[in-house]
Image 1 (spheres, rainbow, N blue to C red):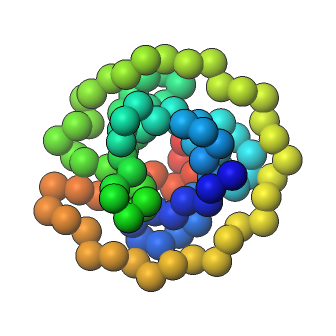
Image 2: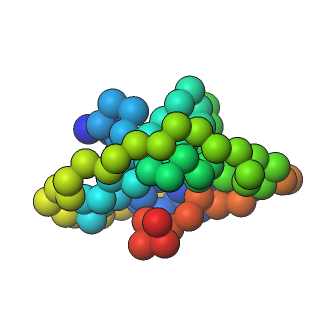
Length: 100
């Protein structure tokens, strides 16, 4: 399990292989390369070189493979936040886990 944070420094959840889980135990994303897609195949964002999650606005219409989310897991304690990073032009922070 590898914890991951959004660009703004909020704990999002964790990776199990290429599967993205929220700290509340929901399977919300799958990674294809650096891009992350929802169960419906909708582009959610990407993993940058620093491991943070961010959304490229220009890719908002991209789609990937669909997948069936795995059964919910036991919620995990939220990890401490990290420092927010300056957002690049054309990007926005990754969606909050409660919005997915």
